[in-house]
Amino acid sequence: MSDTFVDFRHVYLAYDGAAEFAVEDINLQTRPGEFISIVGPSGCGKSTFMKLATGLRQPNRGSVSIDGALVTGPLKIVGMAFQAPTLLPWRTTLENVLLPLEIVEPYRKNFKQKKAEYTERALKLLKTVGLDGYADKFPWQLSGGMQQRASICRALIHEPKMLLLDEPFGALDAFTREELWCVLRDLWTERQFNVILVTHDLREAAFLADTIYVMSKRPGRIVARKENPLPRPRELELTYTDSFNALVHELREHIGRVRNT
Ligand SMILES: Nc1ncnc2c1ncn2[C@@H]1O[C@H](COP(=O)(O)OP(=O)(O)OP(=O)(O)O)[C@@H](O)[C@H]1O
Image 1 (cartoon, rainbow, N blue to C red):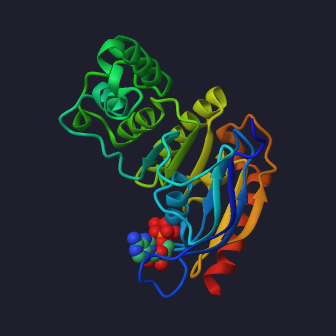
Image 2 (tube, rainbow, N blue to C red):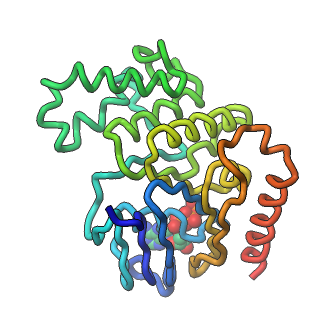
């Protein structure tokens, strides 16, 4: 196994017809199992970074490798969750969670034979995120936080090596958001997948990530890399400590600087 999981080398990407690069000279390496977070002002290229990491876009210059292999097209080893949970309203929670296994190879071809095993896997995952007993409910019967828990299960059902989260808790109230930080922390601690979390919430990045990258806008560049000094395991009480606030403050200063330039 390679000791680098995500490997961006001098990556540039301009969208068709754009006069300038959306992201420029991105260099970033993660170790296997690392949890990284990308923060930055709106439009700085965080989603573009995600598209490059999953192979939905190819760089104009430079290279992107994941798990030792050059990325040349969409990757299958990725699970994704976004700000809107995007559950299908006519499917139950369980059916929503099973969806990737029904449509993505190699699961698709033996979905019928393995349905009992997959269902068991999905129910276990739902239990881990606190949705025990909600498998047969429809999305409209769940709160926003519950829907987001289900969408994280859906992102993890095929046991991806990499989980990409784009503002996954942005639409939730502060209490629910913090609950879900703990859900994500526990899943990651248990399963040790690689995480890239894009967020505007500096406290979220400080609570969850091993390493935090700050991006500037136009062109999107990584202007700071901060290794999170806070020890694990992390409990929510940590967010009331001076060391936590100092880290958030330091990140805020970086963001302030890039917004003023
Ligand atoms: N499909 C596209 N075609 C052309 N330009 C694009 C496209 N997607 C993004 N851009 C441009 O690339 C730059 C980076 O956009 P991106 O969506 O990656 O930023 P972001 O940091 O994710 O923004 P936000 O925080 O608002 O979601 C922006 O200037 C945006 O206008």
